[in-house]
Length: 115
Ligand SMILES: [Zn+2]
Image (cartoon, rainbow, N blue to C red; front, side, top):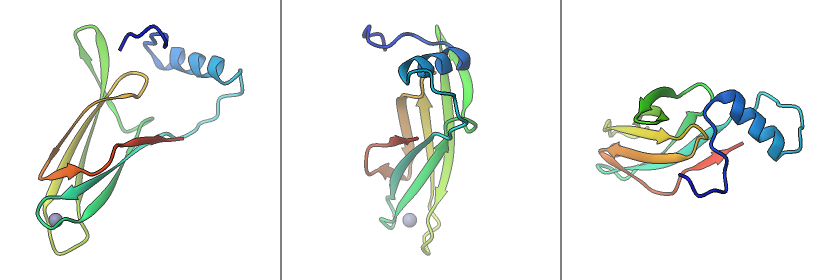
């Protein structure tokens, strides 16, 4: 993304500096950020909530000229159905969702970031 509104940031320190500027230099707390989403099992229709820890739950991979942050989750419902749903999420270095994939299920709403 390069729309000129957001500075490009490449690392955690830069990102924190950016946040400090954004929020007027308030001391950085160790806030957890979670990306939450809901998926629906294609087999039984159960809706299951998933959550990704954006601070500790991502693994970095390098694509052409940028870092991409991956998260993989396997979700299993609580009902008798034991269908496994595998979710894969890709984020930018600023934790914006790039892409998402799911097998055996479907996303039922847009994910959101909780502070
Ligand atoms: Zn199911």
